[in-house]
Image 1 (cartoon, rainbow, N blue to C red):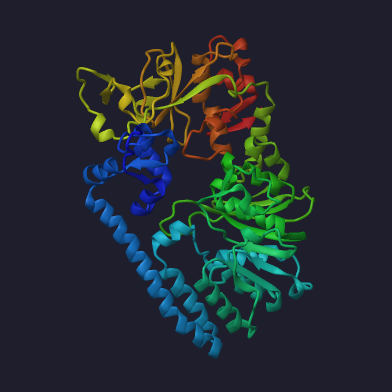
Image 2 (spheres, rainbow, N blue to C red; image 1 turned 180 degrees about the vertical axis):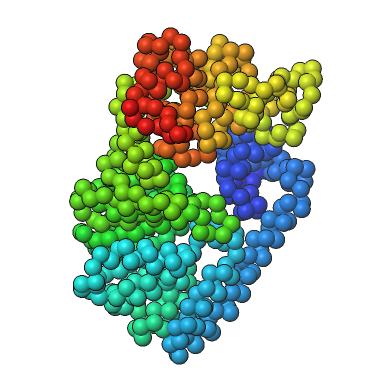
Length: 549
């Protein structure tokens, strides 16, 4: 007789019920809050179904009605407000198409942008571009006013038409302006604005998913856009010519960058406003490589122009040809530099560290020319413990059956603060635990995970760490020992490299594996210190900065 199947709920059902992602559900399963049905019944369910009883208990006991209701009410209010906004705008668009008042049209654009709810913008990755940024980006794509009216312009994520109006003002004929977006209301406003400014009723501004149609034969002389940021997309979404592997997911901004390159005419100009991560995070390396096949003319930092968004916005402007010998105009924090495109080709993961001056770039190149190894394939890496519920498991007093656990903030440069947190020594309760053999290694290096500087400590006391700290255990044949490596990673010169290459507040394994490890230095100097390290590397620390000897 077959066992009676337990009532179950699919991941999709739970995700829709709570308005959460599958990843959140999987995290709750790992933490033991939800019971996957495969533990109870036939394995054909996999882990895509949850025991209905455990889900109901979780809702009642762990999440709390207020939290769920607040989230649901917020989303409902946002949806209701969006619908009301659309209804309010429709008659205004009709009036603009009748009267052709451009001031009213521009005011309606601002009204719609400001009326969109925060959760709607976050879900869609929408951040409307300030007018001064739009004007500068567009002007830099127009290298000459000659025959500008005949140029074919496109904004593949045009929203209410800010780049479209800027293109018109630069002298591009309204007949040659294309605009695409998936928001019907925004498209209606963009059409109305173009009509109000030019008198032309366009059929080239339309509700279209540009990514789904980027294999079109249409090519554009100028593309300027601020694509959606912050949500992952499948590799094929950018069209059959995108180089993204089928199973690889890229950020939406990266997918649009690839699609724009695919649609750009020979010698055409492309201007993209992108998140800072695009320029220095390894996940975007594929797209940076494609852009390096063009001629990059400008890299511009606009600091933090979007309210309530801490990410810096930065622009890249390229022309679609192989003329890479000209300098790139770079601007960061109000300072202007001229950098060579080849500088970025030589960087780890092809990072565009345009925040570094030419002098700094030369110093980085010098350091990478010194004999060195890297940590790639020379160590085992492990994350700190994720309890899944710190309030439940962590105490500030040592108790029977508990062990000390260290946070990232407990780690200093080659030292540890006295333990002030303790957890039960039964690690089966926790959401994420590395193999215990790694915590129990004879010696290892622990480092802060969230930090702008490298802060590492040598550990031979088999300490445990929370997930604000990570650790590495060198292979026996690594070519350097743990104490030597700890000194190097903590050194001023290594922090100089880290900050001027990666510029991130997270210490990522891939970044550490890219740093030059000067193992031969220890064969030359048995008593190592920073002064002798600088001498070995041929640099000097003068006035708080490095210079070549």
